Image: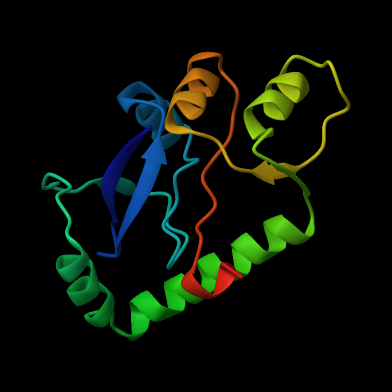
Length: 141
């Protein structure tokens, strides 16, 4: 999975995860990539810096969030809660169950769980559609 820094025509910046550049380009061309703040489908890649983080840097970024970012995070949290409420938790069997659904071995249904990086790469290579669900500090009980 690749994380792209994106920006809509209204100047809202956000991140998006894609299998590869071709996956991003195909989704953007079909207007499937939209700004989470305003819904604009006119989205392009922003300049990206290498992802180097330390605990200290992460803390500064979290503290620098403005009102707009807090609103977007609240919407993401609401979306993640809705996904969890309407899907079956399969734990560390996520990759196995997702593959069974993809290949029609079991009835299609919404699922969520955990997968290793290697499992996620393998699912993407097999054409299985999935996306990471954000985990917020208060989600971990």
